[in-house]
Image: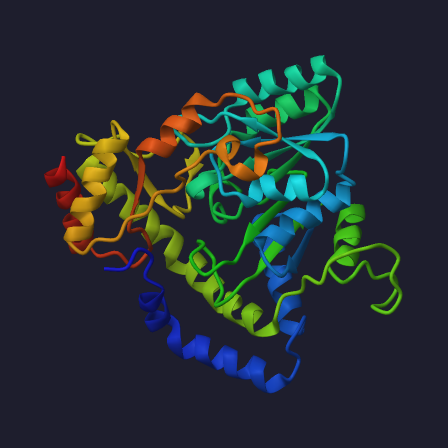
Length: 372
């Protein structure tokens, strides 16, 4: 059993996918070729934003957004304490200060109440300028953007939606990667929409920011790539990866988002009386980058994970350390985030993808229940 079965996906779309790869390879336009522009247009249309700009990876996408806003020394950027390292890493890399915010135990996403408290703490201290909040769509579920937007507007903050795991999720029909002033995603292979290498994208409806990101992603270019008007990055998407993503987007829209949600419903039906299953608020849709259960303690989590391993069932802990406990941030004045700390001790992610069979879901669920 695979944790995320990319082989099954390839089997399903092999004919069209292989043809697209061969076409891109034979075109000799290997970087930023026509497939890249086609992909950007389709992604903008899918999410409902005016501009989509692809780039080298999801981390670069976040960096490009911060550069477009001029985030730097003296600025405070609020970020959930329970997330992948890149969400906070990019803030520090620009010279700004990440302010860690606790998360909601049932959705895993940033807690609006603690966000409000953190913003007021920074404002009262007067040492940093609150500039932005990075709201992560963790495990495929969009963050609580209606409440986050109200807080951001009240405190004049920009919202950067980190949709690396959230592509395809929605709130009341509005698609993820459209909630932030700028949003980003990652095309790492295991993501809901992934390529066969690294890739990422930035989404915005602000034309000025889009123009800046267009420049920053190609060495800060001006009218052409040999006229450089700012210090930028080398962060372009390979044409072959764009060709792959176009075919995989067809599958994602055609059946994968539907089928992964069906798999999640089957997991929840089997496991809801045994463990704490993921909560999807009313009106929300997750793209299920992960299906993450909560156990009662680290010891119980370890027992279940060991039993799954013995049974040949892969599982993962996302994430074993909260951001405030990472050594890289030990010099910061870090806020206490008890929920994030507790989640790191108790979460366990099970095999999850659109190609899970009923038998596989039953096998995993029965193994979890038996271990308990």
